Every structure is written in C-alpha cells, then in structure tokens.
Amino acid sequence: MRETNESLQADMSSLRSENEQQTQEISNLRDRANLSQQNWIKERDELIRREAYALEEFETAKQAMQDWEVLAMEERSLRENLGDRVAELEEQLSTQREAYEKAASERDSQSQTVDGLQRALQDIQDGNEPNWSCRDPADLVNSTEEGTPRLGGALASAARGVAKAATGR
Image 1 (cartoon, one colour):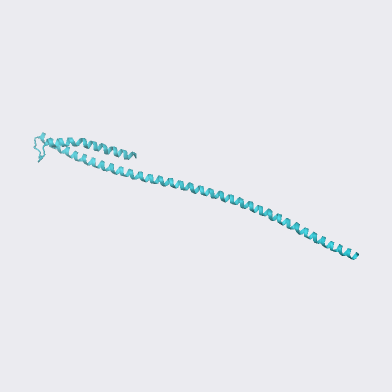
Image 2: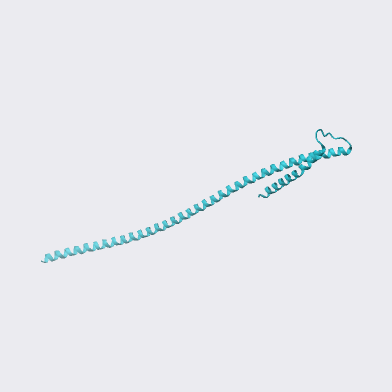
C-alpha cells in the first residue's frame, strides 16, 4: 500500500506540477488576450477617428466644390449679361453714330444751300443777275426754310443719342 501511496503521491505531484504549468499558461494566454484586446480597441478607435477626419475632409471638399460651382455659375451669368450689355451698347453707339453722321451730312448740305442762297442774295443786292437755271428763288428759300427745322431736330436727336451712349444708359 505504501507503494500505491507513493505512486499516488508521485502522480499527484506530477499533476500539481502540470496544473501549475497549465495555470501559468492560461494566465499568459489571458494576459496576451487582454493585450490583444486593448491593442484592437486602440486600433479600432484610431480607425474611427481617421474615418471621422476623412468624412469631415470629404464634406469640406464637397462644400468647397459646391461653392466654386455656384461662384462659377454666377461669374458665367455675369459675363453673359455683360456681353449682352456690351453688344447692346455697341449697337446703340453705332445707331447714334449713323444718326449723327446723317444729321451732320444734312447740316452740311443745308449749310451749302444757305451759302448758295446768301451768294445769290448778295448777287441780287450787288445788281448781278444770278444763274438760277430752272429754279425760282422763292422755291429755293421755301425749301431751305422747310429743311432747317428738320435738320435742327435731327441734330438734337443725334446729340441726345450721343449723350445717352456716353452715360451708358
């Protein structure tokens, strides 16, 4: 029985030793598992933080892009409006120049007619007989008197047009 007792004690000692090793191994495994879990939590938190930062950067970039699009659309609209306005003003200026040139031409024509009439009147006063060919002096005076107000109106209209174009209205 002694032998059995010694054998059982040896087995028990061996089992205790094995139990201590397994307990130590379990403890090591728990420590490693805890460390792994802590590292995983840190990595997860870091990834969550990075994701939040990336989302924030994305939203900022998205907003900036939308702001640029709005700004570009406003600039394009303004450019188109200004282009239309420039074309309109150029057309007004061209029309006013034509009216001014026409009025100046009529003025010059009327001035020549008046000069001719003044020479004819001077010739009559000097006693020289003018060469009227086919026109009556009264007809010449009447046509000149009829044309003068029309010329003045055209000249005033052209001057108003030039002033309007100069002010940009």
